Image 1: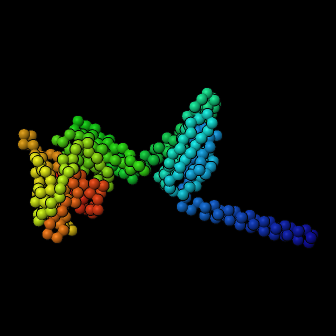
Image 2 (image 1 turned 60 degrees about the vertical axis):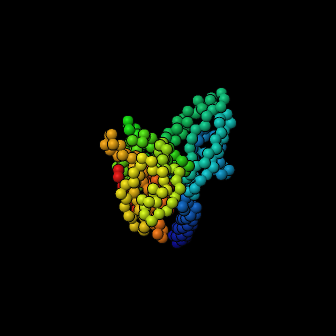
Image 3 (image 1 turned 180 degrees about the horizontal axis):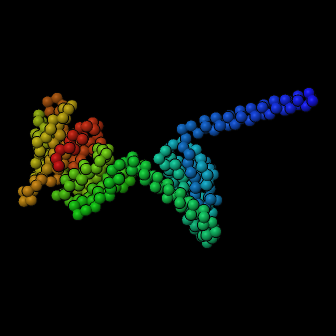
Length: 304
């Protein structure tokens, strides 16, 4: 009886030791896995057909799988016999964590494989749609002006296209007499900081060419630096840090309204005023660099 009791006690002790070892090993694996995933993003890799070979920066990875990647830019190459190959650059971030797509069959054998594995292509197509949707939501969150666009009416259109790295370029198309209307419309966008965007207008800027001639007053500097033609200088505003903002505009006497305002900033240096940049329908960090945002906003707030 005592031997049996000792045997049970020994077995129980061994079980506790074994359980402890398993627990420690599991904990070690968890810590190692967690450590390897620190600051990395879970990324879905799914290219149809699933037999396609996928490489990231020329390193092979498993297709139809998840992988933990550091955020950044990756060169993706996908190839499969009887299907077109692709090579593209993808930016992995918390906002976009997909490496997905569909290869096109290049011959009958490829088309036959695709027909026999329709579910693979359907699954890949579904996840591509989800990825594009999530990317669109993320981009609109980062660039809230996109939530208001496109706008098309009889006076103007405001649309956008993408530059590198999914940076939007806002494109305004209008005629000179309705330029102010387009600008005024953009000023109504809530939670949109217009100075943060690159904005292009289809109209030729009448002040593209100028020769700065600093004078002792802002208006004298403008008159001596620009060929104003029919444009009039508004009564401007003195801003902080020796900045001065005003607009150049045309008044249509026949229609009894002003239109086509161009905003201009000057800054005093010593006894004279200097032009910061050529006049623009809207001043932004892109077309008027190295100027504080509050100064740009003050200039943009001038009529209209």
